[in-house]
Image (cartoon, rainbow, N blue to C red; front, side, top):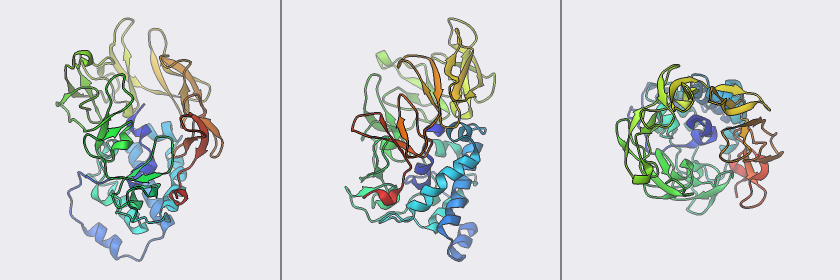
Length: 357
């Protein structure tokens, strides 16, 4: 539901090209460069700690509980892939580059908006690798283009040119850095587009609002544009879940728009509950009185695609059977790699770029 929740931490460890970071190479970086070589394990420990803490800071402590179960589990789950990826063939990433990125996350110019919209600072931009277009990869730093195209629910892909505005996509990850995948209503594919800032003109499938904002007042059927407006960021803030009159709530902060009564979409922002395995999830009550997401990487399994509520399925263990639609899901950063092309059933596989050949 939240952008942070769907933003894989393994992507964050290696993402970035176009950056909003404009600071110079200062003394903290000079000190890191001048110090003795840092080990892969220490650099990764520093990086995953900094990034997982940033995820908590940017979500009012909601995202790590939702995605992993805790900030500590965020770190322990992502430590292994970080170390393994430094041994991937052709990678330009080094322990030193990971350490510099770790130093950047607590800084003011490493913003929550940039984290959510995959627009990392210069220090977290992956150095170019040696992989030519078409060569196997598991992380961007293996590629000369700094972009590894990996299909959804897979862990390996191929080096491809860095996507630009207008490129074909199915999910935001297909668009590289600081671009959204704009998909028109009813379509399965779309095109990469630049994010629209607050107060800008927006329209689903064409112009996508940046994180922390909603497109308010659009009419998709007539291609009538709306305006990007800031979502409610505090409990009891006014909201409209239909986005017809005002923005909804900041899901990334653990808030959902709960209507004030039956027959209306107008209401107030209320905390999203975190539900355990086998507990109800989704929009609960008739009329809706609360909203629940599954804790610790669980999947809200619904009887139909249009159902508003379902039941939480706990993640399967690494290496166990999974289903990305019917459950059980996998615990991030593991992905449910399909057994056969087109299937949603597969095996929970932790990304490891050294295995991408």
